[in-house]
Length: 254
Image (tube, rainbow, N blue to C red; front, side, top):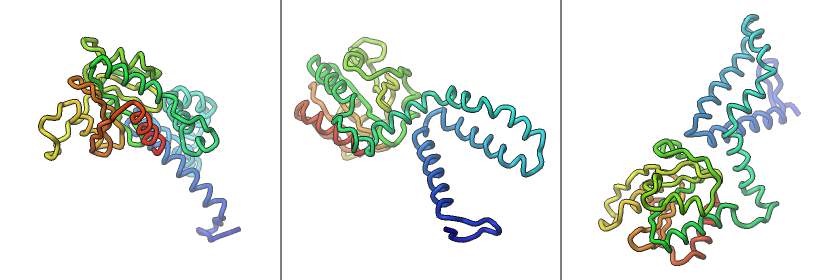
């Protein structure tokens, strides 16, 4: 069915759906890659694709020939360059609401590991700051720390926050189901309404939650109390069951 024409070019319903689908895909790619080196590479790739489309129209035979020669290896180059980003995208798809409608696995796979780690840290009286990234990227925060890119496990988290170890000072950032970095610096909240007696660890958690939609779990070194910072507010957690329920709700609604 033809809706309208642009010059001699007919525009059909399927064309509008096609353009909408492509636009949505590229938007999601940019959103997922925001704050990573993949975002810059994706822009470069789009420029090359645009040149490959325009060059034949302009009669630039030399450039067209050059691009045609490398087209056969584009897929391989794409997979190699964007391997970390592709993994993030696949994990994001697997954790999306649509997939969870068909897969009733319940909790996110990392939830038990995080809760177990928090229990261990609280029992030992070790302070901790765990950032759980949702929709808004925190690439700048990750860059301040030490890159890890490891699977989330309670043992690893407990080890990282053990006092006098190289990575214990700062925050751990968990992104797309992986420990992205440790020893990260978080922005300190300057909200005058915050209790002056509140420690720097809790102020840092609130600070990041004011600037992003991340969920930050805090374990107090002084009292072993557990809190969650989200949306600029700090909520004290009564027990592990409440922690599990709140994290499950916050992470699955993203």
